[in-house]
Image 1 (cartoon, rainbow, N blue to C red):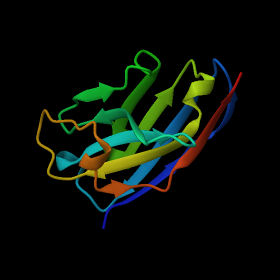
Image 2: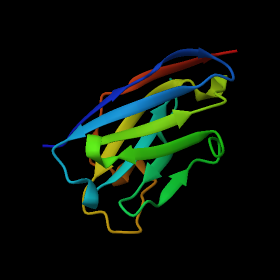
Image 3: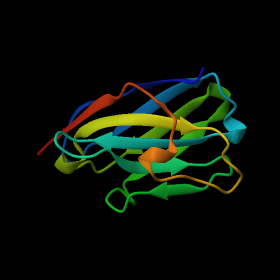
Length: 126
């Protein structure tokens, strides 16, 4: 059973930085795609960044140049480095994973992911 546990959320002022972590267990990183999603109150969950087993990435246009997704396979941990944070980045951030991911693939859609963490809150004040 795949388990994902996020941490690293918190409150920060506009322009600040946070690094989210997602500790994963019960899967083989060589065949899994991972992603970060966020959901603000009253809005749909949206993709922020994704990472495939071959290193392919995607970023939402709104975070390109500010956020960086990475993975430490030895620690089975996914990261999201968030810099130059803005108030509109305020949301609950979720880590997600799916298996059967081929080399060169990466998935953007919420519906493409099977396993989800419980979420961690990020609040950016102006």
